[in-house]
Image 1: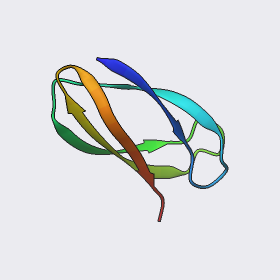
Image 2: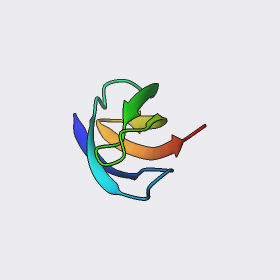
Image 3: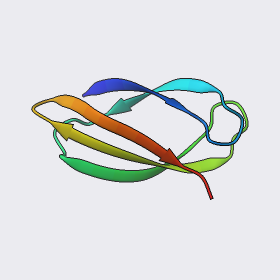
Length: 58
């Protein structure tokens, strides 16, 4: 597990997410802590660390 900072694609608020780094690639939906709109998070991990975090809103 590791934490990464992401930014909501709708309101721009930044917040931290806990990512399971035992999975090499994962996609999931989360809600913004401020505006509550859902968006997709794409995480790429390797050797227990986060390589990249991307967000996508529809």
